[in-house]
Image: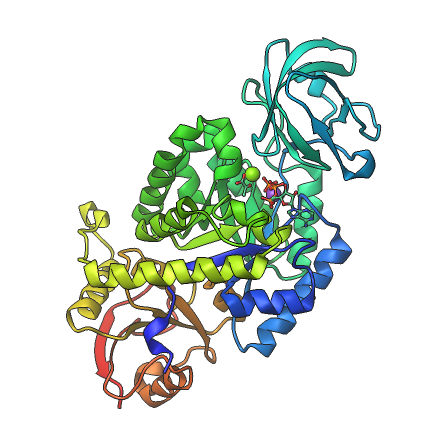
Length: 478
Ligand SMILES: Nc1ncnc2c1ncn2[C@@H]1O[C@H](COP(=O)(O)OP(=O)(O)OP(=O)(O)O)[C@@H](O)[C@H]1O
Ligand SMILES: CC(=O)C(=O)O
Ligand SMILES: [K+]
Ligand SMILES: [Mg+2]
C-alpha cells in the first residue's frame, strides 16, 4: 500500500525546450510534478497551446489533477537577440547597450526597453541574467549606453535586466501581459502569476480582467520588488496565493536579506491562510550537473520545514540537462524531510485566535488538526466549494494529507497548489455525511486508507454554503 508516503509539499516545474514534449511532460508528472509553470517571458502561443493540450492529456492518462500556472512576463526589461544565440561579456571590457532594433554581436547588446537610455545614468549598476553578470554605466549618448563589465559571463538571448538604482515607470500589467492573459483564460489555465506586483491595486486590476472574462483563475502575487515587500500584508490579502520570486528579489534587495524576507512572506501567508510558493535556484547547479549541491538539498528541506505549500523549478526543468532527475531528487528530499517533521511535530498556537471573534470554521479546522494528531488519524477529509475550508485546515500545518472533495474540476486543479491537498471530484452538492460508504471507497481505491485507519472529517451542515464548516467527525475505515 502506498498510503505511508503521500508527499504534502507540492512541486512546480517550468516547461521549456528541455521538457516541451508529451513524453517529457508525462515523465515530469510521474516524477512528482503537481503544477506546470508556463513562463510567458518565453515561447509563443502556438507552442504553449500544444503544451497545455499535452498536460491535459497526461492528466487524463494518469487519472490525476494537474495545475497550469501562467507566469506573466510583467514589466521586465530584457536583452534582445544575438547572432548565434548569445554573446560573452568579459570582465573589464567596454560594451555598448542600445535601444535601437538591432541584432546583438560581440561588444553590442540590444535592450528591449525604449526608455532604457533615459532611465539609467552614469555610475548606475546594471545586472543581467538574474545578477550573474554585472555592468556599470560609463556614459549615455543618444540611444547608446557605454558600459564597463565588472563581472562578466555568457549572455544568452532574452535574459533579464535589473536596474536596482532606478524606478521603472510602468504598471505591473503590460499590453503583452493582457494579451497573454486573454489567451490563457481561453485555455482554462488554473493560476495566473503576476510578475513584479507592487501593490494590492495591481492584483485587483488583474482580478477585474479575469472576472470580466467570466473566469476564476487564481492569482499568485510574485514578491520580487522592494515595494512588494513593503506592501506585503495588503498584497497577500488581495491575492489567492503568493510566490517568493527569489531571482529578481535577490537583485532588487540585497541577496543577504532574501532568506529573512522569505521567512517573513511565509509567516504572513500562514497568518492569512494563503498558499505560498518558494521559487528560483532551488537546484540551480542541476542545470548542468547530474547531482545538486548539499546547499541546494538543504534549501529544499528548509523550505519544507518552514511549511511552504510548494517549491518551484525554473531553468532546471525548462532548459536544464537533468529535468526528470531534478524533480526526483526534489521529491525525495521533501519526503525525507516530511517524515522527520511528522516525528518531531507539536501543533503550534495559531495567531488567528488573537482575533476577537474567530469564525466557527476556524475553531473546527484547528480542532481537526489536533484530532488528527492526537488520534494518529491517517488523513483529514474536507468538503470545499471555494477552497476556503481546505486552506484554513492547511494553515496550522497538519502532517497528514488532506482529501479535499469538491464538485468543480477547476477547483480540483487549483487544489494542486495547496500543501497536503489531494483533490477529489464529486457530483454537485453531495450529501456525503449520509453516504460514508462512497467516501471510504474512493479513498481505498486510491490506496490512501486501509481498514482500521482513523480519519477526521469536517463538513458544513447544511451543505453548499461557501466557507461554512461546523461539523467535525471521526470515523474508522470499515
Ligand atoms: N520556454 C522557454 N524557452 C527558452 N528558454 C527558457 C524557457 N523557459 C525558461 N527558459 C530559460 O530558463 C531560464 C530560467 O527560467 P525562468 O523561467 O526563471 O526565466 P526568467 O526569464 O528568469 O523568469 P522571470 O521572467 O519569471 O523572472 C531563463 O532565463 C531562460 O533562459
Ligand atoms: C520566478 C521569478 O520570476 C523570479 O524568481 O524572479
Ligand atoms: K515570468
Ligand atoms: Mg522574476
